[in-house]
Image 1 (cartoon, helix red, strand yellow):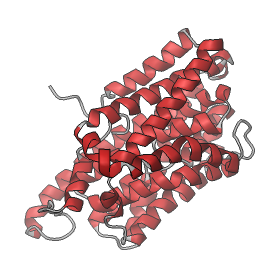
Image 2 (spheres, rainbow, N blue to C red; image 1 turned 60 degrees about the vertical axis):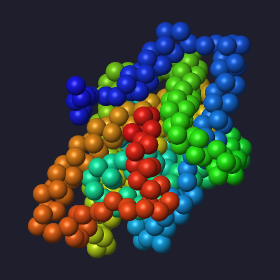
Image 3 (cartoon, rainbow, N blue to C red; image 1 turned 90 degrees about the vertical axis):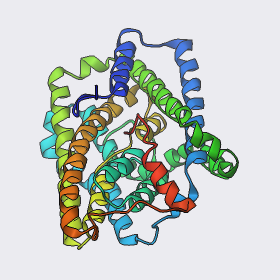
Image 4 (tube, rainbow, N blue to C red; image 1 turned 180 degrees about the vertical axis):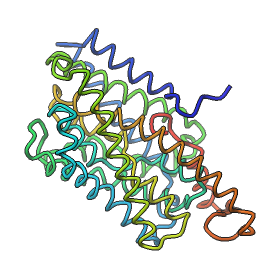
Length: 359
């Protein structure tokens, strides 16, 4: 029996379990230090595997579609932070100051890779462009996110300076990623055939970070500082941000005369935020006791974006199927499967490898 469309996935329940475990049995002292070192190793391994898995041919495919990619990056790293700041009169009263800082951090994060591609494929959008845009956002975000976060969080304490954060993130995230890319031709095929390894490391590292961050935050009195009303307000605040991003990307895509397939890719790549990169960067950018409150808005946004985008993708897929007969298989509604070639196969294979933590 298939899972209902709006039912949270198993990984969401695992995240909740990690938060509950940290709340009831937080690690302290030596155990916290061991957990911190273990988490750093897991993060390095995660980005090494992602670097080894990501096909350079798939990343470079459709790179010439610069207008689409520029719009996605503009939405991700400029419009989203502006939404977070401009909506402060609405969002700030709904949550605590610490949660609002987490919302601003959320706004500075790159887009997801796996789920952006998967939803674009479901909705019969421009899959090659989605692969290129989402991959570029993920890589560029390693350097841009700390700078953007430093600007939008300048009045909220707890964050490392932009350049210090970039130096730390370069060492912990980018160096392992580059090492994986250098070895991609040797081990990329094996990792592609054992994709579950990347998924296990991805989810495992996120759960470790969540448990470690919330352990430190609970020890500092997190749940005394975050009342139930603020948690309910956080759901509303994240919903407002996602709605603004979906509406804005849709309107800009039409205003700039992109065709239907391109608009689908723009909406899904430009409106989503990466959970895996967010929790790893939060651990580096913020003090350990503040990371728990900072990643809480991201965890809520993650589930909301999955449910909303899944519903939209299915709805647009039905519309495209209905319109296909009238167009006789032509136009943006009909995107043919590739007939062959390494790049074409890499594009479609990426759509079938959606990671559960980012799906």
